[in-house]
Image (cartoon, rainbow, N blue to C red; front, top):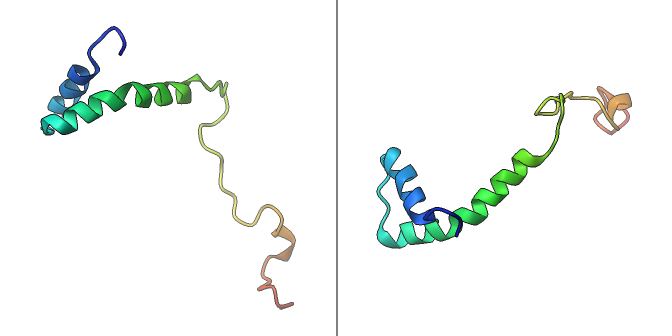
Length: 75
């Protein structure tokens, strides 16, 4: 556990969203919170510089670009 009580932190977040978990659910979420927090922190640790956050999807580009209109049967 960090410098705060993970279960109390989770309880506060859920209460602010209007969610009232059982004591068992709250205990489980409090136990899982540190690992989930570390995983989220790792997402933010990746230096992407000025790159766009999402790759652009360009249908038809790539290996099949030369076969546009082909159904794979020579047509």
